[in-house]
Length: 148
Image 1 (cartoon, rainbow, N blue to C red):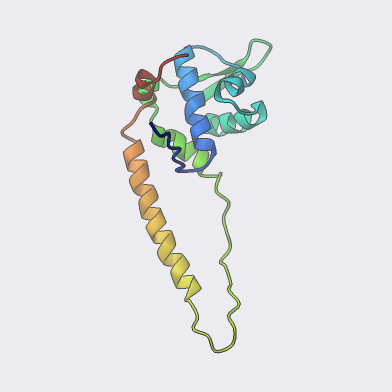
Image 2: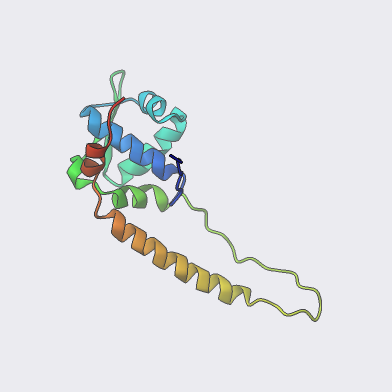
């Protein structure tokens, strides 16, 4: 059996989904260091992701020695689209238009037209992905994931 790794959306999406599933499975408060350990990444990276999730009212935090993060909503109310939108909006840097230097007399690509056309295609693909992700809740994902 071959294992595939599919990478759609910002790199932090997979970690954000894993963190929310862990919070849902725990049913309580989990520290960023414990979440980082469970999803195999750094606690600082987890805290950045959790900040985005908190701004979207998906999770909340409690300070103090026994503090950490917990779900703000039930797993049945949180969709993968909610998480995608929470961590994706500010994760992709905005790029300036690319300028190409063509030798004199060579045929040129309409770079602005190409970039506009590609942005339209990718925007449509993202819209379709978000529509699909809206149909999948954290509760559904939790039901498919075993604790090991």
